[in-house]
Length: 195
Image (tube, rainbow, N blue to C red; front, side, top):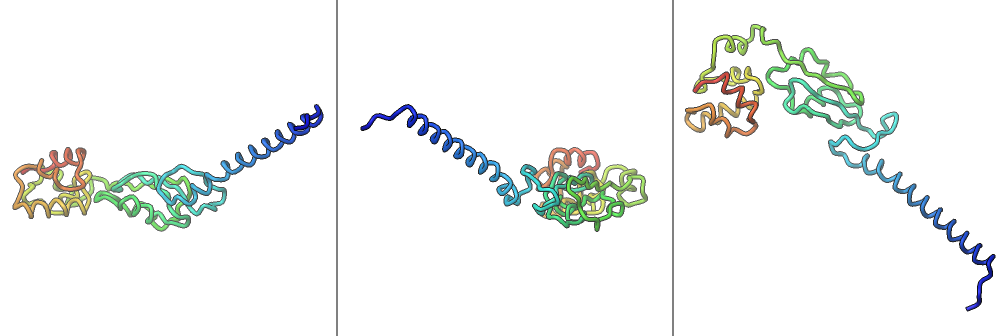
């Protein structure tokens, strides 16, 4: 093998360094380009990822709070309405004051949608039962159960159905077996119901 001159070694080294720099730059450029494509195609409800200016990703992220079944932060398609966001959050609870919300308004990225609760001082049947004392678990109607914090129309219907299937209930604690009733709801039920 012939011996290389000092100039040849220098040229080969310069070429090798140049190739390494070009390769490193290409790899770094690919790693920067990958995350936006992955985030745009994920379609999930996670908030991470990059958003392009002007809504090119086709999504808006909104915070839905107040009298909804599953408050939280949701990713919605661009052009969605407030009604779509409320539905995505599980719909309104039995105490929601939907008349105070413009359900037809378009959503904007970063918007907070607040669904307020009805005032308890109103002359509704639920308000009247709250003043009369505890509700009988054996005779409670769906409407009376909806007046309890954390109970909406679906859960109230599930409670009545569970009661009817089991031939009545001897204790409020038995309602812990109804799907969708957690510790906070059980606390509210114990305060407002009697066997």
